[in-house]
Image (cartoon, rainbow, N blue to C red; front, side, top):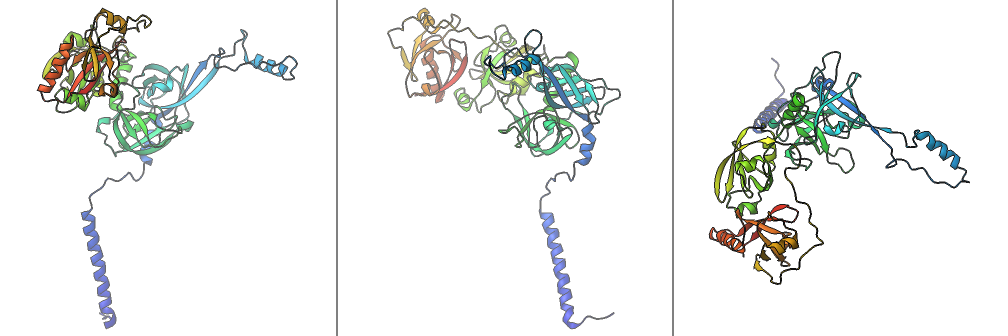
Length: 499
């Protein structure tokens, strides 16, 4: 064995020692770092597996040019050298009856196959008012589609095509399992560029963008543009967890804020459209509003939750069950009502005719009621009164009324009912005036409004107002909840501080 020169022996050993030390530190550092989730190295295999199940949808709508929105024939002098040219041009554009010929308007969107026999899901707004619907597949095949059914409240539509052979289909996953930060894949037809794949993450869940009564969108930063509507949003297992439906964009292009209908919302809609060709949702028969922290305080609630009943539809399921205006619905069918927004979805997803136990808070006590759900037939859950003839007003009473909480109040009588257009079916105390710079004025309380409840107690006289305020003070509360209505029958809740 050849020995190293004395001058090099220490150098090599030192080098080896440094390398060992570096490896040791690297091992320690690696073990100290928490394991972080990594994005997929490539989405190529997943994209290849899914892309044939995603389709492009083109629609055609015939629009009649009846002079409203059509091209107006220019009026030219008889001696104009262009008159003959324009007369001939517009003559060719007109039919025999002198009207402009109907024109076709085309639009593009996306969709995906959920049944190999030809069932396709898309957005309602993609096919709305369409006269012709054509589905374009990734292999170039084009098939005419018929509409099975659609739901404008969730923006979901179901189509049927008749393929010569079974189609590639994709399954619906469970959107409730998706968490903020999970990877997602979108495939669609942006700007007519079919078969486009984009990727991103779940940016947020349960988004309310005020597009409908059942808003609970998945928000994603995966690029979604015009033409992506109706296309699928996949998880990394290749399951559809959302239907891309909307974007926020000042320019019309993607800025990383897109929204998808959760698959858990779409599943029941799709099943009903397949079975009935329409949706069949449960109906409770109430108008509700949010329980704010102020309202919760006025009612002695520990936290702001539930849905506050503003009106009960006459003859509806809620009225039959004994639910009253001013009740706070805390539980529905054994599940807590976390907020006002959650109740319409809970009711809609419950079978029609089911006996449901509803827990309400009334006058500080919880009550359990049983409601037999009806069927939701339309968007309007109640009637509003017609506007009265405001030209016929009786003179105001000479007295100023009783001053309470920055308002002048008067008991209702026939003269005040006529003056403010208040129907005989309304009981309460009318507001004759509102002090400037008062909290009541800040809360947009107006002359002619009627206080129909204080707290959760009905109001019939001025004494009821004073009793309600005294009751709140005795309970140690600093605010009071008023239920107001107006001549149009609109009901709202206002919280005022007790001075």
